[in-house]
Image 1 (spheres, rainbow, N blue to C red):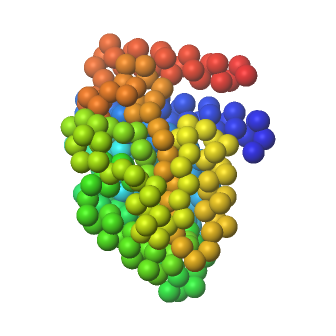
Image 2 (image 1 turned 30 degrees about the horizontal axis):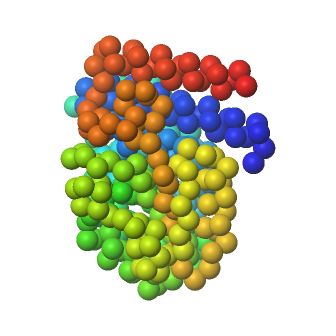
Length: 281
């Protein structure tokens, strides 16, 4: 990609992070840590990778995205809003009684959401089903799914992976957000999923491990995924939980906690400073 393209993606990712803080602060609840760690992936998918049309969210020819780690809806909502699926101004209504932006994605209420998710392991299973359906009907749509590393503790994930390889679903690309932390602490201590790359390869995936916050590496990985034939593709992204907000980075406590007023001000000031630096480049 050109330097100007990368700069714009970096600016957008920063705005996505700002939306995560706005929404979780507005809700006084939610999951900022894993939303922030995946900001670059959300940004690249919705602004460069996927074939979509915000003016026609139910367009049959669109690629599909399934947020398997559905609790990170604040990150998905922020990306969708930035892309024009609904107003950015609605983000602070997250989890409010009368809001369409509930704590987990709802495909019947939120424009741009392709699957209602939340129970871990079910998202990737549905994504596999979508990919199978497109293969069966001869359609060229691609399917993407984002999982958490803690989610890999669910046995259903591996049943889905086994089916994806068995049916040679080369139209499926999964992304594993390996930030190393889940609600109870380190994934290595709670129930180690390692070696993630080796396990996915053993289950029949073509696998690439990259830096989650490097757009050049992200682009190379997705390009390689599209070139791979005869097997599904997995991108394991090494990320920083809470990326972009100093006091949230690498802190498991920010898995599912909203910033208070003072924390909100600090987070927004830090992100606004980062945005100003990017825009000045």
